[in-house]
Length: 587
Image (cartoon, rainbow, N blue to C red; front, side, top):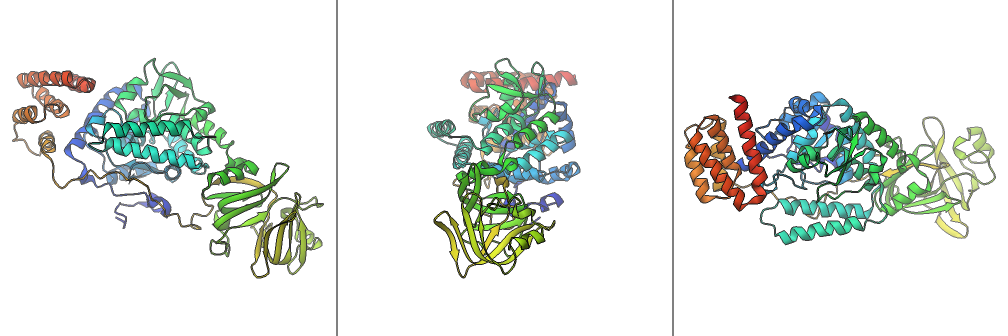
Protein backbone atom coordinates (compact mmCIF):
# COMPACT_ATOMS: atom_id res chain seq x y z
CA UNK A 1 0.00 0.00 0.00
CA UNK A 2 1.50 3.35 -0.98
CA UNK A 3 1.01 6.81 0.54
CA UNK A 4 -1.94 7.54 -1.78
CA UNK A 5 -3.96 4.73 -0.21
CA UNK A 6 -4.01 2.26 -3.09
CA UNK A 7 -2.14 -1.00 -3.48
CA UNK A 8 0.56 -0.72 -6.11
CA UNK A 9 2.18 -3.33 -8.36
CA UNK A 10 4.91 -3.37 -11.04
CA UNK A 11 2.59 -1.99 -13.73
CA UNK A 12 1.28 0.84 -11.54
CA UNK A 13 4.80 1.64 -10.35
CA UNK A 14 5.58 2.77 -13.92
CA UNK A 15 2.85 5.43 -13.91
CA UNK A 16 4.18 9.01 -13.96
CA UNK A 17 3.25 11.31 -11.09
CA UNK A 18 0.81 13.38 -13.13
CA UNK A 19 -1.34 10.28 -13.66
CA UNK A 20 -1.10 9.06 -10.08
CA UNK A 21 -2.79 12.27 -8.93
CA UNK A 22 -6.09 10.97 -10.34
CA UNK A 23 -5.99 7.69 -8.39
CA UNK A 24 -7.99 7.25 -5.22
CA UNK A 25 -8.57 4.33 -2.84
CA UNK A 26 -11.54 2.16 -3.75
CA UNK A 27 -12.83 2.14 -0.13
CA UNK A 28 -14.66 -1.14 -0.64
CA UNK A 29 -16.36 -0.88 2.74
CA UNK A 30 -18.30 2.17 1.49
CA UNK A 31 -20.44 0.03 -0.82
CA UNK A 32 -23.85 -0.46 0.77
CA UNK A 33 -25.94 -3.66 0.60
CA UNK A 34 -28.12 -1.84 -1.94
CA UNK A 35 -25.02 -1.15 -4.06
CA UNK A 36 -24.17 -4.85 -3.95
CA UNK A 37 -27.75 -5.74 -4.94
CA UNK A 38 -27.61 -3.32 -7.88
CA UNK A 39 -24.35 -4.89 -9.08
CA UNK A 40 -25.79 -8.41 -8.74
CA UNK A 41 -29.00 -7.56 -10.61
CA UNK A 42 -27.20 -5.88 -13.53
CA UNK A 43 -24.60 -8.63 -13.80
CA UNK A 44 -27.14 -11.47 -13.66
CA UNK A 45 -29.31 -9.73 -16.24
CA UNK A 46 -26.40 -8.84 -18.52
CA UNK A 47 -24.66 -12.20 -18.36
CA UNK A 48 -27.92 -13.99 -19.17
CA UNK A 49 -28.65 -11.71 -22.12
CA UNK A 50 -25.11 -10.94 -23.29
CA UNK A 51 -24.20 -14.61 -23.58
CA UNK A 52 -26.38 -14.51 -26.70
CA UNK A 53 -25.42 -11.15 -28.21
CA UNK A 54 -21.92 -10.22 -26.97
CA UNK A 55 -18.65 -11.18 -28.62
CA UNK A 56 -17.35 -14.45 -27.24
CA UNK A 57 -14.44 -12.60 -25.58
CA UNK A 58 -16.90 -11.14 -23.06
CA UNK A 59 -17.87 -14.39 -21.36
CA UNK A 60 -14.32 -15.69 -21.59
CA UNK A 61 -13.01 -12.42 -20.15
CA UNK A 62 -15.37 -12.54 -17.17
CA UNK A 63 -13.79 -15.84 -16.19
CA UNK A 64 -10.21 -14.74 -16.88
CA UNK A 65 -10.53 -11.46 -14.97
CA UNK A 66 -12.26 -13.11 -12.01
CA UNK A 67 -15.19 -10.69 -12.03
CA UNK A 68 -17.96 -12.07 -9.83
CA UNK A 69 -21.64 -11.86 -10.64
CA UNK A 70 -22.62 -11.71 -6.97
CA UNK A 71 -20.12 -9.17 -5.59
CA UNK A 72 -18.74 -5.81 -6.66
CA UNK A 73 -15.13 -6.47 -7.68
CA UNK A 74 -12.38 -5.60 -5.26
CA UNK A 75 -9.60 -3.72 -7.06
CA UNK A 76 -6.89 -5.61 -5.22
CA UNK A 77 -8.30 -8.96 -6.31
CA UNK A 78 -8.76 -7.74 -9.88
CA UNK A 79 -5.16 -6.61 -10.09
CA UNK A 80 -3.83 -9.95 -8.96
CA UNK A 81 -5.60 -11.52 -11.95
CA UNK A 82 -5.12 -8.69 -14.47
CA UNK A 83 -1.34 -8.80 -14.02
CA UNK A 84 -1.34 -12.15 -15.83
CA UNK A 85 -2.84 -10.30 -18.81
CA UNK A 86 -0.21 -7.55 -18.53
CA UNK A 87 -2.73 -5.01 -17.25
CA UNK A 88 -3.71 -3.31 -14.01
CA UNK A 89 -6.70 -1.32 -12.74
CA UNK A 90 -7.01 1.81 -10.61
CA UNK A 91 -9.95 3.58 -9.02
CA UNK A 92 -10.55 7.22 -9.94
CA UNK A 93 -13.09 9.83 -8.94
CA UNK A 94 -15.59 9.71 -11.82
CA UNK A 95 -14.70 11.45 -15.08
CA UNK A 96 -11.07 12.46 -15.61
CA UNK A 97 -9.71 14.52 -18.55
CA UNK A 98 -9.76 12.55 -21.82
CA UNK A 99 -6.00 12.89 -22.40
CA UNK A 100 -5.28 11.47 -18.94
CA UNK A 101 -7.78 8.64 -19.45
CA UNK A 102 -6.07 7.63 -22.69
CA UNK A 103 -2.60 7.95 -21.23
CA UNK A 104 -3.55 5.45 -18.53
CA UNK A 105 -4.49 3.05 -21.35
CA UNK A 106 -1.06 3.58 -22.92
CA UNK A 107 0.43 2.22 -19.69
CA UNK A 108 -1.88 -0.83 -19.78
CA UNK A 109 -3.94 0.51 -16.90
CA UNK A 110 -7.74 0.39 -16.80
CA UNK A 111 -9.31 3.42 -15.21
CA UNK A 112 -12.26 2.36 -13.06
CA UNK A 113 -14.70 4.82 -11.52
CA UNK A 114 -15.31 3.17 -8.17
CA UNK A 115 -18.74 4.72 -7.59
CA UNK A 116 -21.82 2.71 -8.50
CA UNK A 117 -25.09 3.93 -9.98
CA UNK A 118 -28.13 4.50 -7.83
CA UNK A 119 -30.98 2.01 -7.91
CA UNK A 120 -33.18 4.47 -9.82
CA UNK A 121 -30.50 4.65 -12.57
CA UNK A 122 -29.91 0.90 -12.67
CA UNK A 123 -30.63 0.55 -16.40
CA UNK A 124 -28.29 3.35 -17.54
CA UNK A 125 -26.27 6.24 -16.19
CA UNK A 126 -24.10 8.79 -18.04
CA UNK A 127 -21.72 8.67 -15.11
CA UNK A 128 -18.81 6.24 -15.33
CA UNK A 129 -19.23 3.69 -12.56
CA UNK A 130 -17.80 0.36 -11.53
CA UNK A 131 -20.47 -1.53 -13.49
CA UNK A 132 -19.47 0.30 -16.67
CA UNK A 133 -15.74 -0.02 -16.09
CA UNK A 134 -15.44 -3.34 -14.25
CA UNK A 135 -18.14 -5.29 -16.08
CA UNK A 136 -17.77 -3.49 -19.41
CA UNK A 137 -14.13 -2.69 -20.09
CA UNK A 138 -12.27 -5.30 -18.04
CA UNK A 139 -13.58 -8.55 -19.58
CA UNK A 140 -12.81 -7.58 -23.20
CA UNK A 141 -9.12 -6.83 -22.57
CA UNK A 142 -8.62 -10.57 -22.10
CA UNK A 143 -8.71 -10.63 -25.93
CA UNK A 144 -5.06 -9.95 -26.97
CA UNK A 145 -5.92 -8.18 -30.24
CA UNK A 146 -8.37 -5.86 -28.51
CA UNK A 147 -5.96 -5.22 -25.62
CA UNK A 148 -3.29 -4.18 -28.15
CA UNK A 149 -5.79 -1.82 -29.79
CA UNK A 150 -6.74 -0.27 -26.46
CA UNK A 151 -3.10 0.32 -25.53
CA UNK A 152 -2.27 1.76 -28.95
CA UNK A 153 -5.36 3.98 -28.79
CA UNK A 154 -4.04 5.36 -25.51
CA UNK A 155 -0.60 6.04 -26.97
CA UNK A 156 -2.03 7.96 -29.92
CA UNK A 157 -5.04 9.49 -28.19
CA UNK A 158 -3.08 11.15 -25.39
CA UNK A 159 -1.11 13.07 -28.05
CA UNK A 160 -4.25 14.52 -29.67
CA UNK A 161 -4.48 18.30 -29.49
CA UNK A 162 -7.52 19.71 -27.69
CA UNK A 163 -9.35 23.00 -27.74
CA UNK A 164 -10.66 25.11 -24.87
CA UNK A 165 -14.17 24.00 -25.90
CA UNK A 166 -13.20 20.36 -25.33
CA UNK A 167 -12.42 20.99 -21.69
CA UNK A 168 -15.61 23.03 -21.23
CA UNK A 169 -17.63 20.09 -22.60
CA UNK A 170 -15.74 17.64 -20.38
CA UNK A 171 -16.56 19.72 -17.31
CA UNK A 172 -20.23 19.95 -18.31
CA UNK A 173 -20.53 16.17 -18.84
CA UNK A 174 -18.77 15.52 -15.54
CA UNK A 175 -21.16 17.90 -13.77
CA UNK A 176 -24.20 16.14 -15.26
CA UNK A 177 -22.88 12.73 -14.26
CA UNK A 178 -22.43 13.92 -10.67
CA UNK A 179 -25.81 15.55 -10.15
CA UNK A 180 -27.65 12.72 -11.90
CA UNK A 181 -26.21 10.22 -9.41
CA UNK A 182 -26.58 12.49 -6.37
CA UNK A 183 -29.64 11.70 -4.30
CA UNK A 184 -32.28 14.41 -4.17
CA UNK A 185 -31.11 16.42 -7.18
CA UNK A 186 -33.90 18.61 -8.57
CA UNK A 187 -34.97 17.25 -12.01
CA UNK A 188 -34.97 20.85 -13.25
CA UNK A 189 -31.24 21.09 -12.45
CA UNK A 190 -30.60 17.86 -14.40
CA UNK A 191 -32.60 19.16 -17.38
CA UNK A 192 -30.66 22.42 -17.26
CA UNK A 193 -27.33 20.55 -17.28
CA UNK A 194 -28.47 18.41 -20.24
CA UNK A 195 -29.50 21.53 -22.17
CA UNK A 196 -26.11 23.09 -21.46
CA UNK A 197 -24.36 20.03 -22.90
CA UNK A 198 -26.59 20.17 -25.98
CA UNK A 199 -25.68 23.85 -26.43
CA UNK A 200 -21.96 23.15 -26.11
CA UNK A 201 -22.14 20.23 -28.54
CA UNK A 202 -23.85 22.44 -31.10
CA UNK A 203 -21.33 25.27 -30.67
CA UNK A 204 -17.96 23.52 -30.54
CA UNK A 205 -16.54 25.44 -33.52
CA UNK A 206 -14.00 23.65 -35.70
CA UNK A 207 -13.53 20.15 -34.30
CA UNK A 208 -10.19 19.46 -32.62
CA UNK A 209 -8.10 16.31 -32.91
CA UNK A 210 -9.28 15.35 -29.44
CA UNK A 211 -12.93 15.65 -30.49
CA UNK A 212 -12.27 13.38 -33.49
CA UNK A 213 -10.44 10.75 -31.48
CA UNK A 214 -13.04 10.97 -28.74
CA UNK A 215 -15.61 10.05 -31.39
CA UNK A 216 -13.52 7.05 -32.43
CA UNK A 217 -13.24 6.00 -28.81
CA UNK A 218 -16.99 6.30 -28.33
CA UNK A 219 -17.93 4.30 -31.42
CA UNK A 220 -15.44 1.51 -30.65
CA UNK A 221 -14.35 1.18 -27.01
CA UNK A 222 -17.68 2.40 -25.61
CA UNK A 223 -20.36 1.58 -28.20
CA UNK A 224 -18.71 -0.77 -30.65
CA UNK A 225 -20.24 -3.72 -32.47
CA UNK A 226 -18.27 -6.48 -34.20
CA UNK A 227 -19.06 -8.98 -36.94
CA UNK A 228 -21.37 -8.18 -39.83
CA UNK A 229 -23.94 -5.41 -40.21
CA UNK A 230 -26.61 -8.10 -40.50
CA UNK A 231 -25.47 -10.09 -37.45
CA UNK A 232 -23.35 -7.93 -35.12
CA UNK A 233 -22.11 -8.78 -31.64
CA UNK A 234 -21.49 -6.37 -28.77
CA UNK A 235 -18.01 -5.50 -27.47
CA UNK A 236 -18.29 -1.82 -26.43
CA UNK A 237 -18.24 -1.26 -22.67
CA UNK A 238 -21.13 1.22 -22.72
CA UNK A 239 -23.37 -1.42 -24.25
CA UNK A 240 -22.04 -4.29 -22.13
CA UNK A 241 -22.81 -2.37 -18.94
CA UNK A 242 -26.21 -0.94 -19.89
CA UNK A 243 -29.28 -3.14 -19.47
CA UNK A 244 -31.40 -0.86 -21.64
CA UNK A 245 -29.00 -0.05 -24.47
CA UNK A 246 -27.63 -3.58 -24.86
CA UNK A 247 -31.15 -4.66 -25.86
CA UNK A 248 -32.07 -1.47 -27.72
CA UNK A 249 -28.96 -1.61 -29.91
CA UNK A 250 -29.93 -5.00 -31.30
CA UNK A 251 -33.26 -3.76 -32.65
CA UNK A 252 -33.88 -2.38 -36.14
CA UNK A 253 -34.43 1.04 -34.57
CA UNK A 254 -30.65 1.44 -34.32
CA UNK A 255 -28.93 1.82 -37.68
CA UNK A 256 -25.84 -0.38 -38.16
CA UNK A 257 -23.02 1.06 -40.27
CA UNK A 258 -19.72 -0.50 -41.40
CA UNK A 259 -16.92 0.92 -39.25
CA UNK A 260 -14.61 3.32 -41.06
CA UNK A 261 -12.71 6.56 -40.58
CA UNK A 262 -16.06 8.29 -41.05
CA UNK A 263 -16.80 7.43 -37.40
CA UNK A 264 -14.28 10.10 -36.36
CA UNK A 265 -16.58 12.74 -37.87
CA UNK A 266 -19.73 11.30 -36.29
CA UNK A 267 -20.54 13.08 -33.03
CA UNK A 268 -22.53 11.56 -30.17
CA UNK A 269 -24.84 12.69 -27.40
CA UNK A 270 -24.06 11.11 -24.05
CA UNK A 271 -27.52 12.00 -22.69
CA UNK A 272 -29.49 9.98 -25.28
CA UNK A 273 -29.58 6.44 -26.72
CA UNK A 274 -27.45 6.22 -29.86
CA UNK A 275 -29.37 6.35 -33.20
CA UNK A 276 -26.62 4.47 -35.07
CA UNK A 277 -23.69 2.20 -34.25
CA UNK A 278 -20.61 1.10 -36.17
CA UNK A 279 -19.70 -2.52 -36.85
CA UNK A 280 -16.07 -3.57 -37.24
CA UNK A 281 -15.41 -6.89 -39.03
CA UNK A 282 -12.80 -7.84 -36.42
CA UNK A 283 -10.60 -6.33 -33.74
CA UNK A 284 -7.57 -6.05 -36.06
CA UNK A 285 -9.55 -3.66 -38.30
CA UNK A 286 -9.92 -1.26 -35.36
CA UNK A 287 -6.14 -0.81 -35.30
CA UNK A 288 -6.07 -0.24 -39.06
CA UNK A 289 -8.60 2.63 -38.84
CA UNK A 290 -6.76 4.06 -35.82
CA UNK A 291 -3.49 4.18 -37.78
CA UNK A 292 -5.30 5.80 -40.72
CA UNK A 293 -6.60 8.48 -38.35
CA UNK A 294 -3.16 8.96 -36.76
CA UNK A 295 -1.82 9.73 -40.25
CA UNK A 296 -4.09 12.80 -40.30
CA UNK A 297 -2.90 14.09 -36.91
CA UNK A 298 -0.33 16.80 -36.28
CA UNK A 299 1.56 14.07 -34.44
CA UNK A 300 2.57 12.68 -37.84
CA UNK A 301 2.06 15.65 -40.16
CA UNK A 302 3.70 18.47 -38.19
CA UNK A 303 4.13 21.58 -40.32
CA UNK A 304 2.47 24.96 -40.01
CA UNK A 305 -0.98 23.44 -39.47
CA UNK A 306 0.27 21.34 -36.57
CA UNK A 307 1.93 24.30 -34.89
CA UNK A 308 -1.20 26.40 -35.41
CA UNK A 309 -3.28 23.71 -33.67
CA UNK A 310 -1.02 23.98 -30.63
CA UNK A 311 -1.31 27.77 -30.64
CA UNK A 312 -5.10 27.57 -30.84
CA UNK A 313 -5.27 24.96 -28.06
CA UNK A 314 -3.58 27.28 -25.54
CA UNK A 315 -2.32 24.16 -23.77
CA UNK A 316 1.07 22.63 -23.11
CA UNK A 317 2.32 21.04 -26.30
CA UNK A 318 5.44 19.89 -28.13
CA UNK A 319 6.88 20.31 -31.59
CA UNK A 320 9.62 18.06 -32.92
CA UNK A 321 12.00 19.35 -35.58
CA UNK A 322 13.60 17.31 -38.34
CA UNK A 323 16.76 17.01 -36.23
CA UNK A 324 14.80 15.29 -33.44
CA UNK A 325 14.99 18.37 -31.20
CA UNK A 326 11.77 18.73 -29.20
CA UNK A 327 10.47 22.02 -27.83
CA UNK A 328 7.73 21.90 -25.19
CA UNK A 329 5.71 24.83 -23.89
CA UNK A 330 2.62 26.92 -24.52
CA UNK A 331 3.00 28.01 -28.13
CA UNK A 332 1.98 31.63 -28.63
CA UNK A 333 2.77 32.69 -32.19
CA UNK A 334 4.29 31.69 -35.52
CA UNK A 335 5.71 33.56 -38.50
CA UNK A 336 5.22 31.78 -41.79
CA UNK A 337 6.49 32.13 -45.34
CA UNK A 338 4.88 30.48 -48.36
CA UNK A 339 2.93 28.07 -46.16
CA UNK A 340 5.88 27.04 -44.00
CA UNK A 341 6.72 28.11 -40.44
CA UNK A 342 9.94 30.12 -40.25
CA UNK A 343 9.80 31.26 -36.61
CA UNK A 344 7.90 30.06 -33.53
CA UNK A 345 7.51 31.46 -30.05
CA UNK A 346 6.33 29.95 -26.77
CA UNK A 347 5.34 31.89 -23.68
CA UNK A 348 6.05 31.00 -20.07
CA UNK A 349 8.01 27.98 -18.94
CA UNK A 350 9.48 25.96 -21.80
CA UNK A 351 11.96 23.10 -22.15
CA UNK A 352 14.02 21.40 -24.84
CA UNK A 353 14.47 17.65 -25.20
CA UNK A 354 15.81 14.97 -27.50
CA UNK A 355 14.14 11.57 -27.70
CA UNK A 356 11.87 12.48 -24.78
CA UNK A 357 14.82 13.30 -22.52
CA UNK A 358 15.37 16.89 -21.44
CA UNK A 359 18.62 18.45 -22.65
CA UNK A 360 21.02 19.44 -19.90
CA UNK A 361 20.75 23.19 -19.23
CA UNK A 362 17.62 23.56 -21.36
CA UNK A 363 14.95 23.23 -18.67
CA UNK A 364 12.17 25.54 -17.51
CA UNK A 365 14.59 27.42 -15.26
CA UNK A 366 16.62 28.35 -18.32
CA UNK A 367 13.52 29.21 -20.35
CA UNK A 368 11.18 30.78 -17.78
CA UNK A 369 9.60 33.35 -20.08
CA UNK A 370 9.43 31.39 -23.31
CA UNK A 371 11.51 30.12 -26.21
CA UNK A 372 11.62 31.34 -29.79
CA UNK A 373 13.67 30.24 -32.76
CA UNK A 374 13.87 30.36 -36.55
CA UNK A 375 13.50 27.13 -38.52
CA UNK A 376 14.17 26.32 -42.14
CA UNK A 377 17.06 26.85 -44.54
CA UNK A 378 19.61 29.63 -44.84
CA UNK A 379 19.14 31.92 -47.82
CA UNK A 380 21.34 31.11 -50.78
CA UNK A 381 22.67 27.85 -49.30
CA UNK A 382 21.32 24.58 -50.70
CA UNK A 383 22.27 22.40 -47.77
CA UNK A 384 20.33 22.82 -44.49
CA UNK A 385 22.34 23.46 -41.33
CA UNK A 386 21.36 20.09 -39.85
CA UNK A 387 22.98 18.23 -42.74
CA UNK A 388 26.22 20.20 -42.69
CA UNK A 389 29.36 18.29 -41.76
CA UNK A 390 31.86 19.88 -39.36
CA UNK A 391 33.85 20.90 -42.46
CA UNK A 392 30.74 22.54 -44.02
CA UNK A 393 29.94 24.41 -40.82
CA UNK A 394 33.47 25.79 -40.63
CA UNK A 395 33.34 26.85 -44.26
CA UNK A 396 30.16 28.84 -43.62
CA UNK A 397 31.72 30.24 -40.40
CA UNK A 398 29.05 28.51 -38.27
CA UNK A 399 31.72 27.74 -35.73
CA UNK A 400 32.57 28.39 -32.08
CA UNK A 401 33.88 31.90 -31.51
CA UNK A 402 32.72 33.26 -34.87
CA UNK A 403 30.52 36.34 -35.17
CA UNK A 404 27.92 35.50 -37.80
CA UNK A 405 24.87 36.94 -39.50
CA UNK A 406 22.55 34.18 -40.62
CA UNK A 407 19.81 35.05 -43.12
CA UNK A 408 17.00 32.49 -43.27
CA UNK A 409 14.60 31.98 -46.14
CA UNK A 410 11.55 34.11 -45.33
CA UNK A 411 13.27 37.06 -43.68
CA UNK A 412 14.54 35.95 -40.26
CA UNK A 413 18.07 37.12 -39.38
CA UNK A 414 20.19 35.92 -36.46
CA UNK A 415 23.33 37.92 -35.67
CA UNK A 416 25.69 37.15 -32.81
CA UNK A 417 28.78 35.37 -31.56
CA UNK A 418 28.57 31.57 -31.49
CA UNK A 419 29.50 30.06 -28.12
CA UNK A 420 28.86 26.39 -28.71
CA UNK A 421 26.75 23.81 -30.48
CA UNK A 422 24.82 20.78 -29.24
CA UNK A 423 24.76 17.59 -31.32
CA UNK A 424 22.47 14.56 -31.30
CA UNK A 425 23.67 10.96 -31.11
CA UNK A 426 24.15 10.83 -34.87
CA UNK A 427 26.48 13.83 -34.72
CA UNK A 428 24.03 16.26 -36.32
CA UNK A 429 23.91 19.70 -34.78
CA UNK A 430 20.54 20.41 -33.12
CA UNK A 431 21.17 23.61 -31.14
CA UNK A 432 23.50 26.61 -31.47
CA UNK A 433 24.09 28.95 -28.52
CA UNK A 434 24.92 32.64 -29.12
CA UNK A 435 25.92 35.64 -27.04
CA UNK A 436 25.44 39.32 -27.93
CA UNK A 437 22.64 38.09 -30.13
CA UNK A 438 19.94 39.89 -32.08
CA UNK A 439 17.10 38.19 -33.93
CA UNK A 440 14.95 40.14 -36.39
CA UNK A 441 12.15 39.57 -38.86
CA UNK A 442 12.32 42.24 -41.56
CA UNK A 443 12.45 45.40 -39.38
CA UNK A 444 10.98 43.83 -36.22
CA UNK A 445 13.28 42.80 -33.34
CA UNK A 446 12.27 39.38 -31.97
CA UNK A 447 15.15 38.98 -29.50
CA UNK A 448 18.06 41.16 -28.42
CA UNK A 449 20.41 40.87 -25.45
CA UNK A 450 24.05 41.49 -24.64
CA UNK A 451 23.94 39.47 -21.42
CA UNK A 452 21.42 36.70 -22.00
CA UNK A 453 22.45 33.78 -24.16
CA UNK A 454 20.30 32.85 -27.14
CA UNK A 455 19.65 29.22 -28.05
CA UNK A 456 18.77 28.69 -31.69
CA UNK A 457 16.99 25.46 -32.54
CA UNK A 458 18.21 23.67 -35.65
CA UNK A 459 15.70 22.01 -37.94
CA UNK A 460 14.56 22.45 -41.50
CA UNK A 461 10.94 21.61 -40.68
CA UNK A 462 8.46 20.65 -37.96
CA UNK A 463 7.85 16.92 -38.36
CA UNK A 464 5.50 16.48 -35.40
CA UNK A 465 3.26 18.50 -33.08
CA UNK A 466 1.33 17.01 -30.19
CA UNK A 467 -0.32 17.56 -26.84
CA UNK A 468 1.79 17.43 -23.69
CA UNK A 469 5.47 17.55 -22.84
CA UNK A 470 8.27 15.61 -24.54
CA UNK A 471 9.90 14.79 -21.19
CA UNK A 472 7.18 14.39 -18.55
CA UNK A 473 9.65 15.43 -15.85
CA UNK A 474 10.21 18.86 -17.40
CA UNK A 475 6.97 20.39 -16.08
CA UNK A 476 4.99 20.31 -12.86
CA UNK A 477 1.85 18.57 -14.12
CA UNK A 478 0.26 18.06 -10.70
CA UNK A 479 -2.61 20.43 -11.40
CA UNK A 480 -5.67 18.24 -10.97
CA UNK A 481 -8.22 20.80 -9.82
CA UNK A 482 -11.78 20.02 -10.95
CA UNK A 483 -14.49 22.59 -10.33
CA UNK A 484 -16.90 19.95 -8.99
CA UNK A 485 -16.08 16.61 -7.44
CA UNK A 486 -17.97 13.39 -7.05
CA UNK A 487 -20.02 13.32 -3.88
CA UNK A 488 -18.99 10.75 -1.30
CA UNK A 489 -21.86 8.28 -0.70
CA UNK A 490 -20.29 6.70 2.38
CA UNK A 491 -22.14 6.84 5.68
CA UNK A 492 -21.24 5.72 9.18
CA UNK A 493 -24.33 3.55 9.63
CA UNK A 494 -26.79 1.76 7.38
CA UNK A 495 -30.24 3.27 6.99
CA UNK A 496 -33.27 1.08 7.60
CA UNK A 497 -33.76 -0.02 3.99
CA UNK A 498 -30.05 -0.85 3.62
CA UNK A 499 -30.27 -2.92 6.78
CA UNK A 500 -33.05 -5.03 5.23
CA UNK A 501 -30.93 -5.54 2.10
CA UNK A 502 -28.05 -6.64 4.32
CA UNK A 503 -30.20 -9.21 6.12
CA UNK A 504 -31.23 -10.83 2.83
CA UNK A 505 -27.67 -10.70 1.49
CA UNK A 506 -26.33 -12.30 4.68
CA UNK A 507 -28.99 -15.02 4.45
CA UNK A 508 -28.18 -15.80 0.80
CA UNK A 509 -24.45 -15.96 1.49
CA UNK A 510 -24.88 -18.15 4.57
CA UNK A 511 -23.77 -15.63 7.18
CA UNK A 512 -27.15 -15.52 8.91
CA UNK A 513 -29.74 -18.27 8.37
CA UNK A 514 -31.99 -17.43 11.33
CA UNK A 515 -33.75 -14.40 9.89
CA UNK A 516 -37.35 -14.63 8.68
CA UNK A 517 -37.55 -13.77 4.99
CA UNK A 518 -41.32 -13.55 5.27
CA UNK A 519 -41.06 -11.00 8.06
CA UNK A 520 -38.55 -8.90 6.09
CA UNK A 521 -40.87 -8.95 3.09
CA UNK A 522 -43.87 -7.88 5.17
CA UNK A 523 -41.92 -4.99 6.69
CA UNK A 524 -40.70 -3.91 3.25
CA UNK A 525 -44.30 -3.91 2.02
CA UNK A 526 -45.32 -1.59 4.85
CA UNK A 527 -42.31 0.72 5.11
CA UNK A 528 -40.91 0.79 1.56
CA UNK A 529 -43.83 -0.12 -0.70
CA UNK A 530 -42.15 1.11 -3.91
CA UNK A 531 -38.86 -0.72 -3.47
CA UNK A 532 -38.81 -3.52 -6.06
CA UNK A 533 -35.27 -4.93 -6.06
CA UNK A 534 -35.31 -6.46 -2.56
CA UNK A 535 -38.69 -8.19 -3.16
CA UNK A 536 -37.17 -9.65 -6.36
CA UNK A 537 -34.28 -11.03 -4.29
CA UNK A 538 -36.67 -12.46 -1.72
CA UNK A 539 -38.75 -13.95 -4.55
CA UNK A 540 -35.60 -15.66 -5.82
CA UNK A 541 -35.08 -17.30 -2.42
CA UNK A 542 -38.72 -18.38 -2.20
CA UNK A 543 -38.49 -20.04 -5.61
CA UNK A 544 -35.20 -21.75 -4.73
CA UNK A 545 -36.84 -23.19 -1.59
CA UNK A 546 -40.02 -24.06 -3.51
CA UNK A 547 -42.06 -21.84 -1.18
CA UNK A 548 -44.95 -21.36 -3.60
CA UNK A 549 -47.35 -19.38 -1.38
CA UNK A 550 -44.79 -16.68 -0.37
CA UNK A 551 -43.58 -16.54 -3.98
CA UNK A 552 -47.14 -15.94 -5.19
CA UNK A 553 -47.62 -13.16 -2.61
CA UNK A 554 -44.37 -11.46 -3.65
CA UNK A 555 -45.32 -11.63 -7.33
CA UNK A 556 -48.64 -9.99 -6.55
CA UNK A 557 -46.85 -7.21 -4.63
CA UNK A 558 -44.43 -6.65 -7.52
CA UNK A 559 -47.35 -6.43 -9.94
CA UNK A 560 -48.76 -3.64 -7.77
CA UNK A 561 -45.46 -1.76 -7.89
CA UNK A 562 -45.52 -1.97 -11.69
CA UNK A 563 -48.90 -0.23 -11.70
CA UNK A 564 -47.67 2.51 -9.35
CA UNK A 565 -44.24 2.85 -11.00
CA UNK A 566 -44.42 1.93 -14.71
CA UNK A 567 -40.73 2.85 -15.21
CA UNK A 568 -39.78 -0.11 -13.02
CA UNK A 569 -42.05 -2.48 -14.92
CA UNK A 570 -39.50 -3.87 -17.36
CA UNK A 571 -36.88 -4.16 -14.62
CA UNK A 572 -39.29 -6.15 -12.44
CA UNK A 573 -40.31 -8.39 -15.32
CA UNK A 574 -36.66 -9.04 -16.18
CA UNK A 575 -35.87 -9.84 -12.54
CA UNK A 576 -38.74 -12.32 -12.29
CA UNK A 577 -37.83 -13.85 -15.63
CA UNK A 578 -34.24 -14.38 -14.48
CA UNK A 579 -35.40 -16.11 -11.30
CA UNK A 580 -37.89 -18.34 -13.07
CA UNK A 581 -35.47 -19.24 -15.88
CA UNK A 582 -32.85 -20.28 -13.33
CA UNK A 583 -35.48 -22.17 -11.32
CA UNK A 584 -36.68 -24.08 -14.38
CA UNK A 585 -33.12 -24.95 -15.35
CA UNK A 586 -32.41 -26.33 -11.87
CA UNK A 587 -35.61 -28.31 -11.74
